[in-house]
Image 1 (cartoon, rainbow, N blue to C red):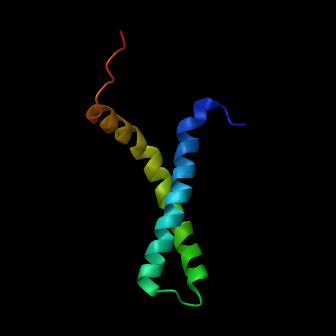
Image 2 (image 1 turned 45 degrees about the horizontal axis):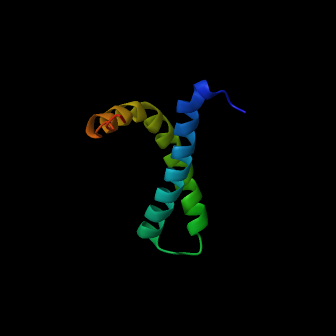
Length: 79
C-alpha cells in the first residue's frame, strides 16, 4: 500500500484518470459521433487529456480545497 503522506498525489492521479476518461469519451462522441473507429479516437484523446489533467489537478486541488473551506459553514459545536 501507499503511505498516507502521498494522499494528495494519489487523489490527483485517480481524479485525473476518471475525469479525463469520462470527459474525453463524451467530447469525442460529441465531435465525431459513434463511428466505427471511435475507440481509437477516444483512447488517443484520453491519453492526451490525462497528461494535462494530472498535473492540473495536482496543482489546482489545494486551491479548490481552500475555496470549499471558505464557502462552507462550520458545524455548530455540540453542547
